[in-house]
Image 1: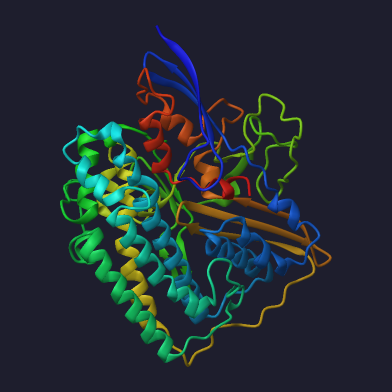
Image 2 (image 1 turned 135 degrees about the vertical axis):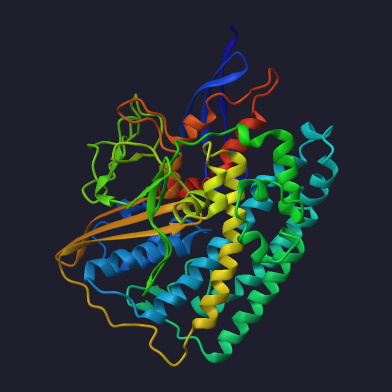
Length: 477
């Protein structure tokens, strides 16, 4: 039996710092330990602030999913006030959020994930020359067209939100800018141009054709556009055989509107969908560099262990739902929402191919949602309600960022924030072990991954890690 230990990291092409220690036996990962080595402390910054300051401070946790943080924060403040935003304001906020999420997925596919297929290690593969041409970092034709399309569709955020990132447009009562009829036409024109990019480059077919695929075979057998090139590569590398998840999928439900969430909330496991009970969330700190006790976020705190004592090995806490790990992200959202192809893709569990396929499905479905939402804007109606916050109370804001379930919990006393806690998608997926010794989802997904004798940064490990699209700056905020 051959044994060795590898420290892989920092990872390139992920947001923030990440290190993973691997125990390798007989050419496979036996155990993995994920470390989020960068502590930031945004939750601590909030203590003593005016509650509305959360709308300015918390979105700066991240520069690529700041609207997600803004949406969660504004929802928590709205819950604190016991009020809902104006229906048209909620619709405009959904458009802002949907544009950010679709851009995140597009960036991940072209710039973060598929760039690995251009590596020289894959030169003997029949598809390698095409992958080099399309996905080479900074120079691939798919990369260039993706960046141009992304910049174009973000103009919608400029129209509705004034700027991106860190817009202050989303408020508990709605949005600060009421779009005009002219704005609506400009947004429709922008979405039409973005649709052309999706249909000519990413899917090679109408968006509806991909969004409405009904089986795993139809998705994995797709042979057009860059999505088809990925499916060809995934089949050749057997990416469906790598990176299994826990088999439990969590979504808080995406895009809260007056009539309900556009994508359903829930927890899916073994063919059964049950409601999300956020009261069952606990953040275990047994293997984190944190002081205190395992608690629900509303009762938890952020007290870093500056001595970094064992058995802690990460700044990341270990969130659990009813004591168990869950997978969250685009695939989980599509499964919970009941998309037939997504359900078929996870029939035997999640994996690298299924996670990327879930993002591609979501890109197509989000484009269709955005087109419907923009058409439904009514410039003559109210986009903001006046909302007053109480001097004491608490609120919870649950939304879906591109990478999965995001929650904000706020408590105020005498008009000031007394506690603020956040559980981000990558906190769920990249958590350390809990008090029972159960590894986090990524740690478990890495077990069994092949490691070549001459590899110090195994390709299989990189594919698995990036399939979850980690945002480490959000993880320990």
